[in-house]
Length: 440
Image (cartoon, rainbow, N blue to C red; front, side):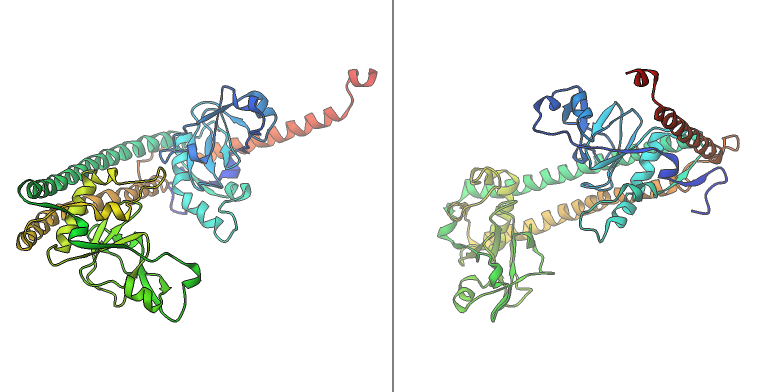
């Protein structure tokens, strides 16, 4: 970036930092995994940069593997699985081969580096495109640019970022609380209606007033054919709406067309995932079908489909479907349980009045919830804007008395030359046999 403040310098990760990789000790050696050295993978690095290791290893594990222990202040960049995450080491730790660690450098605030690399994480993902494995090499990491401010300004920038982020977090927390209150309000409105109907009228099983049927089993062999038709999946059915923007197709024979063709007024109910999630089909796509992850409920004249759709939402919000869920890993709503679902059933005219009332009341709540959710989503681009301002020198003011970053880079370069010369000298001396070696 050419318009940086005068005290700043443009450099690269490799020109500033020594970088080391990690590794995984053998899981076949039990003693390796009973030590006091925290060891982490990319999955242990949080979005906040905090590292929460779940395993500990021994020094024998370090000596017997490619992992390395890095000191406090190291900045860890994920370069493979979880690409782009950046964490900060706050105690000596070892780590897996998914990461590379930038070792601490005097004169550089590690949080300044972590925030900046978090901002350029998109660049890491960009350079990995087109490769078989989503990742970047150590060489690519070393070539990433860094905008380096004077040390005191680095510290001011970190403080300003954290202050701004704290305000954002507080705002997002408030919005989350508002969203939860709106959700509870929605539940209260639905409960008042349907508990009242159950208390004052008759309740019947769904199968007495509607036909429920699961959809067509998916088949990869039938993705094309003479009767290829669009069909709905579980993901296409959301609460109160159906997304028909990108429907897949499957071949339906004439018999299956008769069984699985949708009609206006059919209620689609999710069989798995968020079980009970439902919407009414109003035929935005002609000649459409549905797959087995959905129940199709076709109401008799005595049951309004929108009344049923609101009842299903009430049951979901109230946790009613938990008693019908089966399976330990993924919840499912069996067809028989749906057919026996209790339905408070007033007359059809009253059902339609309930639908109109709920449409107005829940529509207002939904509109407010939508605005809250949009505000929550704005927090991510706001964070990006804060980081962009920070690392272009626009977040805090400059102090002319701060030592320019170019002086720091000169010292780092000199230290590296001295270190390299020291290593070569040590290597030459080691090439001559010691007294002990010559007399052995």
